[in-house]
Image (cartoon, rainbow, N blue to C red; front, side, top):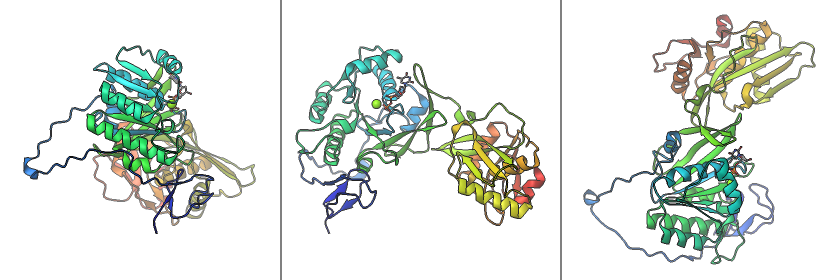
Length: 432
Ligand code: TYD
Ligand code: MG
């Protein structure tokens, strides 16, 4: 059956209209898909033997920050359309204005702010110390007008903030609706390609983590960069890139005067090396960035047998404490157990299980763990220690940070670093 309707929220397609999306449960988000072609694209067909096709070496445009360039795959490709997505207030406009400033050193950049007035942008620019003549701000929100300005003014780069607040009179749907988003994105894609000008569009993300409105947008653009937050830091990474790998990450910090990119972020969450019982260290991966974290546990015998975890899954904490109790014959049940990942970091991967166990064992024994120990691995129900993804990268990161003893599962790992290999959890208790 023909899928004639789509949910603006989650992208679910359906042949029938519903008041409530049966996929994500949102109300009033089902809209008709407008298949009508409203843009006439001049198609000139090229055909050549592959051996004769020449490609001019694309000069990538630099953003002024190496690690942001790397997220773009080595700089911004002229003629590309990138979507920069993130929750409202996370720092998208700030980051793009800073990038716009850097690009404006080499030529004209136009920043279309459909969301904020010129005055508001000026206030932000003042905080960021931005005052370039080459950086043009416009408050246009008509898609076709914006496209024609890009075509006639031919800037070095253009930014549209945001795709949800621009619209075209060619489409009879409200601003932010899926048909408007689809039209505008297509229009900017065409403008970027035809004129060889990179266009960056901002997209807001809903609480659920989807790009608000169209998941569809992700498929249309060349690159999707997302900005997320962990423990007060902003993480920029690509989840799609037609022009590069998606394994690079930039970690930034918002200051009074804009975003600062951190040079070597992997140790930012390591504390002041406190040598107290219950603290164990591990390497988690956020986006694509290895990050050392500290896990602390407190076991209180005066409780009612409640487990509380901050930054970690409580059910997993309960499971791991049951494994320790069974395999190591340690008494935990009946005590109150608190587990916290310091720095406000939250971890949703099993790679830190071994460190969680080490932290609990240390808390129960009331003996600190050597601060130079790091623990990486998943723990199974039989107390077996299992491999997790990116072991070698985590080990290399731990070694760079100066951990001298790294506890890992038994496996053939390609690394020069000396490792303590553990098959079952009870061996860990012997080491620490
Ligand atoms: P913003 O870039 O407007 O977020 P987005 O475009 O993703 O919605 O900025 C978000 C927050 O950053 C806002 O609460 C104000 C703060 N901020 C600073 O702390 N320092 C600064 O220099 C600037 C420009 C903003
Ligand atoms: Mg903004």
